Length: 171
Image (cartoon, rainbow, N blue to C red; front, top):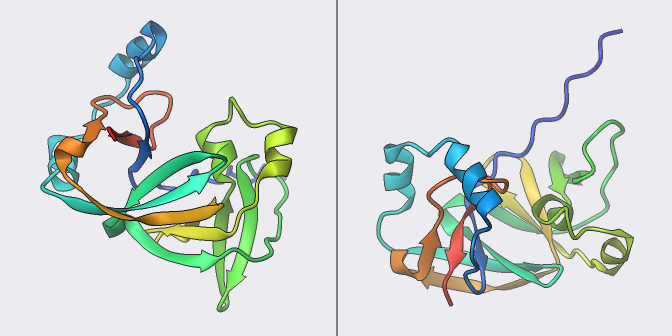
C-alpha cells in the first residue's frame, strides 16, 4: 500500500514572542537572508496600526497571538493520539462533535529545549484555536489581552528557522 501523506503543519497566524530582544547569530542571519520574504501585501495587512494580542504561557515562555487570528479558547480535554504523526502533534480533541487538532506548543516552538523533564513538568490547561483552521496551541495559562502599537514590536524581516515567529515584543 502507498504510504499515507504526512500531516501538514498547522497554518499558524503570526506569533509574537515577548521578552527582551536578543542578537541574531551569524548562522541565523545567513539562514534568514536565504528565506522567502512575505509579500508587501501580507506585511501591510498585518502591520497597520495598533492591534490587540492575547498573551499566554507555555513552559515559562510568554507568547502572543493577535486577536484577529484567534479562533477561540477551549478548556483542554482528553486527546486521542494518532499513529504516524509528528512528535509535536498531541492528537485530536473532540469538542461539540468537532475534531480539533492539538499541538504540543512547547515541542513545536522550542524543540531544542524539549526533553523528558520538560514534558513531565508541562500542565496544559487551554487550547488556543488559530483562526478557523481547526488547529490549536496547547498552553498552560492565559496571561491577558494587551493593545500593542507597531513600535512595541521588533518585527522580523526574514523568515528563519522559526517561520511562525512574527516578532518580539520589546517590553
